[in-house]
Image 1 (tube, rainbow, N blue to C red):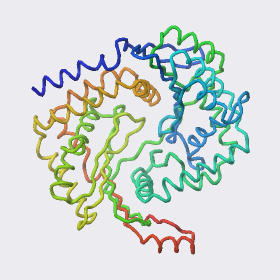
Image 2: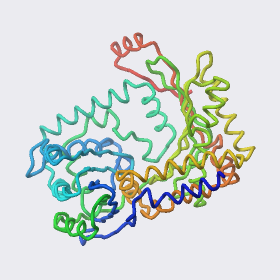
Image 3: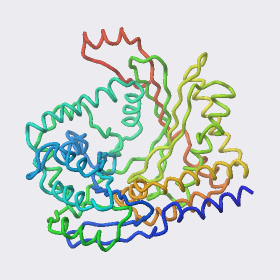
Image 4: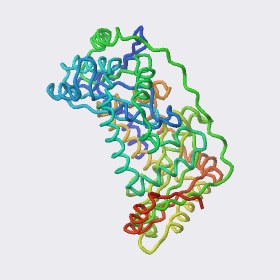
Length: 458
C-alpha cells in the first residue's frame, strides 16, 4: 500500500508542474542564460533574475556588501528615481522583492502574463545602469545596520548561530554572516559597492528564469530586446579556500541576555556537488526528516512528547549548496532539564541511527511525506523558477530539479545508516551553547563597557 502511494505521488510530479513542464533554455551572445518553464493553468508568471554572487564570494573588510547592494537595487537608476521601480511594478498589479544568500542574490516580480515586458525593461535597466548615489547609500547602510542589530545582535539565538558558523568553519566563506560583520558594515564605502556591482551584475553572471503562462520563443525575443544590448563583463572565477579537515570536536559558549538556553550542533557534510557518492546528500536529507519531519518524527515523538527533555528540537540539511556545509541540530531544553541533557539525548538518537537501520515502514512513511512535500512545492510557479535559478547559480545543472524527487525516493535504510556513520562523527562536530545572562545586568554591562555580548570558547 505504501509503495503504491509513493508511486502515485511520483506520477503527480508532471501534473503538479503543469501540462507543459519542459524547460526551454537559451543563452544570449552576451552570456545571459535564460530558462523558461511554461505553465498555462493561470494567466500569471514569475520573472526572476539570479546573480551568481552572495556572501560566500566576499572577503574580509567588505562582508555584507552583497546584501547592501541588494538594498541599493531599489534606489534608482540613471533613468529612474529611488522607489520608482517598485511603484511601476505595483501600478502594473505585480509584487516584487529580492533576497541575498550565501551563493546568490535574486530579484523577482510576480505579474499577469501580459506584463512580462515591464519586468524585463526594469531589470535590464538596473542590471548595468544603477545610480548608486552617496546619499541613498548612506541611508540604506543605516537601514542594514539596524536590521543587523534587530535580527542578530539583539536576538540571542541568531547571535549564537552567527558565532557558531564562525567557529565551525576555519577557512570556508560560509563562516561569514550574509548580513556582514558589524565592523565591516561600519567601514563599507560606496566605492566598494560600485566595484562589486560593476564586476558581478553583468549578463554573463546572471540567469533569467521565467515560469508561467508564457510562450518560450516570445520570452526569448523579449529578452533579446532588453537584455541583449547589455555588455558582458570580464569575470574571473573567484578563488575559494577549501575547508581543512577538522581534527576534533569544537565547543563554543555564547553569553548573551536571554530567557532560556539554546543548543546548536553541526557536523561537516558534503553538498550534492562534492559528495563521494551521488546518493549521499539525498540520504542525508531523508535522515533529517526521520529525526525532524513533523509530529511523528523521532525528535517530536521521543525527545519532546515522550521523555519531555526538549521544549523544541530540530534537524536540518541542505542538499543544494555551492560549498560543503553542515548537518545541523538545534534544541531548547524543557523545564527541569538543561542543555547537557538535551545534547546527550540528541547524541543517543544519532547513535541509534548509526547502529540500527531504519525500518522499512518508518522509511516509507517519512519518504512519502518528503516526496509529497516536494511534489506539492512544484505546484508553485515561484518555487518552479526558484529551484532552477538556485541550481544554476551554484554551478549545477537545472536538470537536477527533474530528478530530485526520484533521488529521494530511491534512498534505502542501508544508505541512511551509512551516511550517519560516515558523517555524524565527533571529529566533524561543532557544538555551541547559549549561556543566558540576566537581561538587565547585561544591558548595564554593555552601557558601561560597550562590550555587549561575548562568545568564549569552553
